[in-house]
Length: 533
Image (cartoon, rainbow, N blue to C red; front, top):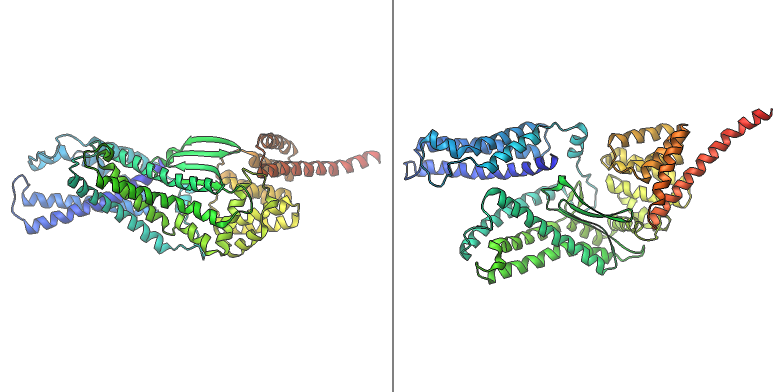
């Protein structure tokens, strides 16, 4: 439902713009050509129709604006806009009867696609958003100095991308007429929408393949490949393919490439990141060259979709090269800037790459370049990025058995979470539960972190989850629960593949077991002394 709402919000904005253009054209016709023309309604009827389109434009624009801005009134305006779609779907049936029109280009039956969209949208917006969902949706990326992005550029780039997409459609219409292509592959709004979605997925696929091939050429390893709703992820040594229904309307993607060693050049990361938009540039130019060189009747034209693919590929290239920041991360352009500018951001990307390498190589947290992590953490002190750096340092110190230093890094990570990174996934919070229970021996804080994690309703009950539950039960004195959870954590740890990060997981299970056994011996000692006395 969230995906449907998000898609409709942007469609409301587009439809609002279209209705505004129709309203402007109607007002112009009312003043420039006030006399009734052949097959056109009376001026009074045209005025009523123009006013109706103006009201529709107001509803759609307001629904789109409130949704994009995450306003509390989004739900009410979304339902209103969807009901407007339902009414508009009967326009071909009602308008001729009300105004006595006889317009041959209006089909005398309801617009079923519009009707279905309105009904489904009304159902989607009728569901109340929970406080947790509202907070997650309203969460904004924390601006961090030096990351190369700005709020103004983010907004301007979004507006420019929307305008460029609209301009592409206008150009495409002129180009098709010039080539003699009368209509696309399929008629109907729903069919055209499906073709556009498929086109977006193909462009995203080409983009992500560019990242993948460049990373492979640099000796990097693939961990994840995401295009729209399709996900291929290396999870605990096993490749898993899934389909995320929430991303059904998404044409975005992501590629997770990690180096095979800790001493990798920054230039390999730059080439891998830049390859995505550059491949879009190359395929876009090639598609447009073929589209202009071949006649309109050629099968390769695909009824004009080849040219549309080329034009949108160029838009995707330019948009991805703009330094942008969002809740999901940074654009390729922002990452390239951060890597080339050096400083803490270049070190941050190296630190993330090192941590990712531990999942597919023998690299352990104690093998990290702590100097790189500390330099990055000095300049990046908030947001998810700052939190990640502190957790990397925490794992490094813990893997080196420096308990005091690990406790310090964990407290710093907790401070960043409280100040600016409280929207991180639930899985992150298991680290705090274990650390506060087993490292800092703070039962009250460990329980607080556990309650926070449970409120997020974690879906991955993996070794981190059971180890955290075991540590919490132990520090609170619930030894039966602690032992049961430890057995599940140990069983999950044994199933993990042979990689540095997973060896660290197994060692942490052993560390927790040793602490639990030591506590049991200390508790049993006074009992034995009392029995001897």
